[in-house]
Length: 188
Image 1 (cartoon, helix red, strand yellow):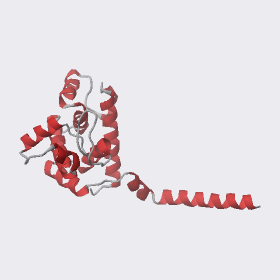
Image 2 (image 1 turned 30 degrees about the horizontal axis):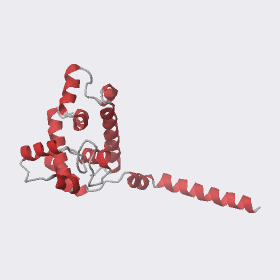
Image 3 (image 1 turned 45 degrees about the horizontal axis):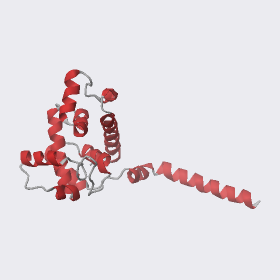
């Protein structure tokens, strides 16, 4: 009798939890897919005419919003910008001096430099955000070669044709987060 009562209580608790999860799925989803540094993302995205959802998706894919990151290849900060690329962006954009330490540890600086660069890539690839995301990972030269030679057409539907596995998966991951963020944060 006691075992049966414990099973019933457990069943009721499990059903209650399942009900809460289904009824509060937006709450659960925003808990699973948070966006940090919203004001910085909004400001930088607005400055360069790019979607804040895309900037947030790149940050999520690159570092999951953790500052102080450095990749094995030397990319720095939230948006994982290579130091040479950052120096080029700073010079082209006319930013004040940006140090590697600032890029690595200051979210606002990483987001500003990364957003400017993403906008530059978006313009280079005719406002094709899929190609721009691929170029953010593989470099614009590689993506230009793929497009010019017909290896890849720059569309999400044919992303499996991207010759670099890392870039293929990166594009899929970024676009997955981008779509999630658009659904969860429509007014972002």
